[in-house]
Figure 1 (cartoon, helix red, strand yellow):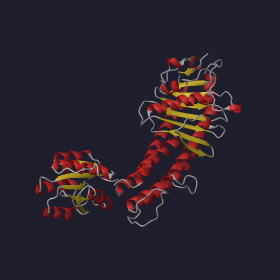
Figure 2: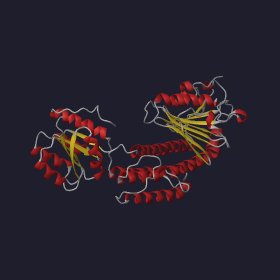
Figure 3: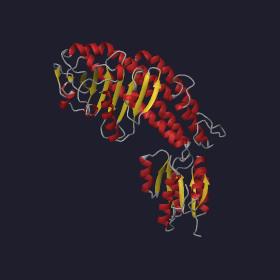
Length: 134
Length: 324
């Protein structure tokens, strides 16, 4: 059996983690969910994740700061930013800082799965989305 | 004589005609705002099924957008029918209060599913969305209690007011300023014509650059258009305010109120057909398939939105055929 993709999912809205975890489990991801960015970066200190999916607007730390933190810790990690407020300035800043991709809320789990699959491909560990049951 | 050769255009601007044009343009703004509101409701309905990852911000933004758009609609309606202004604003205030209640609804779960048969999750965000959709388009406990019901009320009041105007001031103005010998049943007013006073003159539709009117009359070989069928059929007079892509067509007959608004620009997001017909008119004889219809005490509202440009064009041709 191939290695599971290690994914950290950070969003201060509990619904996001609650709904996305089972959707990502289905495509061979091992997902750790966080609602608090401080706790998330503490976990990033402890473990190298393949993919970090983070909301952009959160109290205490925003998604850009999380991106910067991840890049200091592990350049290999792909960061995907979730945004409910598709702000051009933030998007431009994040692109300049090497974010892998964006996804805007509301979105379907399949949309994120596709981005995760692209990230996995870029990491050299492709995943097959065709076997997923709806 | 073909109907295209029998049309007459008003190419000058009496103050009353100018007011009529302003009124028509304002009514179309009202329609645009209503369309935006319907799109918000549709978006919420699509999301509530549960396939989406959304957060509370999506729902509160939806509430705020509805209130803002409803405010624009109420403003348009008050310009068109100021005597109903107090009623409109009272209702709007009530909806604003309901919106504020929903926005402050606690993030708790475990409430009953209120969105009909939709498989709604027990997530608090989805519960809130479900409550919002009930407010938008649930069972109306009293007239105007839901946003959609309030919209219908607004339309009925505004259309009644516009028709009262047409029956009196505008009707007289047109009849007094356009040659009485004309054997045509449709007066044309260019919505964007400047205010230079020119004499009224017979006009062929071939000279008129209005795509929707040409489509509407495409299969009309002659004679009068009438929304009444069978034994009730009678000649009616029409007034058409138009531009290249827009048409606002209304009857000018007391007791026979048919009102059609359309945009045919080739862009799906802006093209539409809206119809109001009073209860004396059987729209089953007129409307092609694919129209959403709403019945009110004062008549039927019907519209076709988000259809392909070809579907809108075909519908207009069909409506013209059925009116002739």
